[in-house]
Image (cartoon, rainbow, N blue to C red; front, top):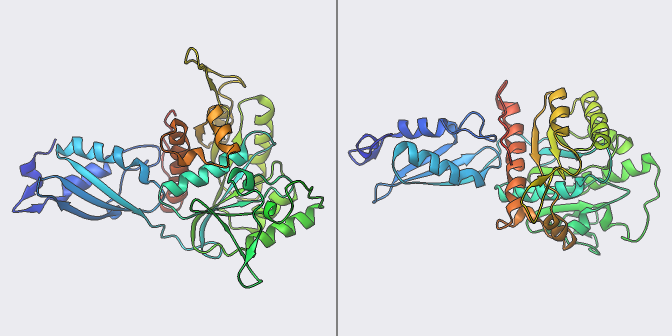
Length: 358
């Protein structure tokens, strides 16, 4: 513990103990602590408490209450932290800094629901976020974002304007094709339509563009993997063997086209009994861990089979954006881990990712 006399002298703040305390913080997202370069200012208030301003190089704002507690306990001084997120990497596509593909080997594993909630969580963590619905044959994003029936808008007859869904920029083929119609296109036509959506949308400046990929390993997946500078992909699976077998194929495809697999998300991982409170592993247990261990990637999150997720989705709302919903913390933790992994894989040769239980 540091006492007040060691922190403050001659009305100035002794920064080194604070820098040391921040560097000692550890979590899954902040795997190597909080670097001194993140610190903007440290000020002393009249009541001898500290206020620290940080600029985070990845989306991670909601973890700051834990950082405050950690630093306060070490220094034995009340601490408040304010943050802003500024991602300093150069844009990889237009003014987009990171493109993250959300993929699955098969349909029905909750990939689209996971994608929109990750987008919502990243936005809540302080980032500028967009989402592209690349599932040409089964676009779900308009319904999940409450935008069914929305019609495309263009200001100059050249570029489409993305829709705004509570601060998330969204684009989907579902805005161009009636929701009750079928998209009957061969692979090259579908891939061309997707390329147009990506290239002819005025995305503006984004920290993260989340791409909801179609299930499988076909033409569209190859187009996105080979022609788009994706920073990485997240594979969504469920615990049962059939889903894991298809997830394995998805990992193999991305490895072949040199798109980093950031990790797995095990959706519908378990069900909490409303009567006894026990976790029931309806679709099996530890499947994602075994697959992740085989490929040397982390399991980013275990998302439960929860009725709240379905109810929010059917209402066109993001449960990840509701801070009062317990499940929002699960999506937030996964979003922070994805964001930090993208940062650390570029700025550190190797780090040990610590995965905590949800």
